[in-house]
Length: 312
Image (cartoon, rainbow, N blue to C red; front, side, top):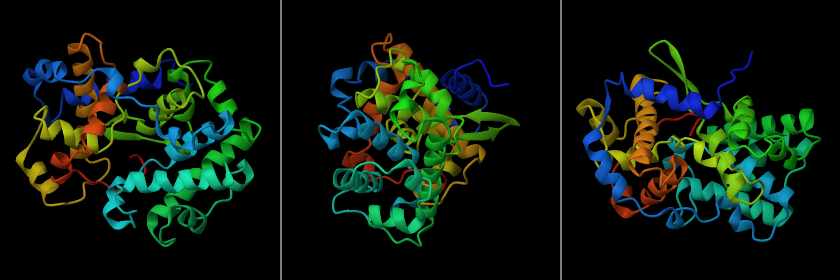
């Protein structure tokens, strides 16, 4: 039987459990209050989401864009190896390719989406079709297309509508799709993190596709950048061997204790920051602040953790 506890609450509980046992990553709790006080207001951190680049697109197109982009919102471990657009990061290169596709041709019909291959995706993103990430992307998009055909009449809007106005329910739904899978094992127990299932709910809200009154109950969207920012800013402290491996550019094994601790401790640290801000900022809002902060030269100049996987 499916759990009656929302996915986001399971993420929150599991990440707190990992943080309480972590050996490689430590949250500097004495730094939390001052760091929370220095965070900017929410109005400066959240400006419409990725679908804003589509302009006045209709609701179905915006829903399609968000679900397709977030289904392939991973690959950060591969970013140094892809062909980036001038001045853009790996993620921004992928997002720009998707924007161009949607502006030129609109959303993929579900039946076409369910048949995409690596060459199709590479053509949209301006990449080498032999790059391993292209087949990973194609597999994820095929899964989205299959779900649309099987349960949503081949359309994207009904996916958002099926959540009944709840971001938590939307994350619960997407967490059952292979395209949004994100669970690791730590200490013998499953640790759900579901970065992309949760960020899709937030992005659908920001895109005006849905209005989720419980959006603030999502957790942070744990990738490799938020832990990096928190490490650089002194909120996360890493064991010297892990810090040295990251600074040497070594890839972390997805699902290893070190990699799970980095993501889980970042999620829990953001929860502590939200409490310290007297809930003036929610975990998703803090996540956006930290993610945007990580684009600054200070953070870009330092090596960040890299792991090749389909979670982030």
